[in-house]
Structures are given as C-alpha cells and as structure tokens.
Image 1: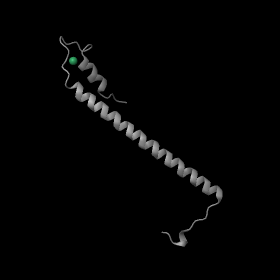
Image 2: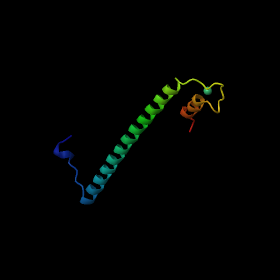
Image 3: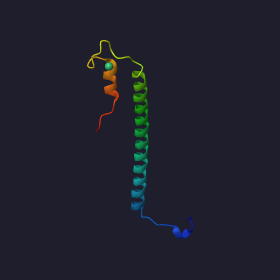
Image 4: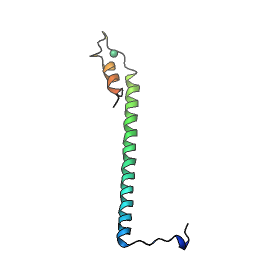
Length: 81
Ligand SMILES: [Zn+2]
C-alpha cells in the first residue's frame, strides 16, 4: 500500500480540489453527527413525556377535546409524514 509505486502525482489545482472536497466531506460528517445527536435528544424527550402522560388520569367527566391526557397522547403520537 505504501510502496513508492503507489505514489500519485497531482497538480496544485487537483490537490486544492481534493483538499476542498475532503473539507466538505468533513463538514457534512460533522453536520450529520450533530443532526443525529439532536434527533436522539428529541426522541428521548418525547419518550419521557409519553411516560409522564401515561401516569396522568383522564379528565372527569371525560371530554376528549378537553382531557389533558388525550390531548397530550394525540400530540405525542407521531403522524405519518
Ligand atoms: Zn382522556
């Protein structure tokens, strides 16, 4: 792999382009990682909120439009995109 035979010569322009591409990939990888982290945090918040809502009793007398539990359940249930 590192034998002298595998050496590749690049012009300054080609090297600059390669370097720019590498930086772009690096930036994209970093943004992807950040997005994944944010998605994980959001997922955890929803999970915790659902667990909390599960402990809340339904309103009495029950009216689905006014019941906090039903409204929170609806809010925290993913809708199809
Ligand atoms: Zn309810």
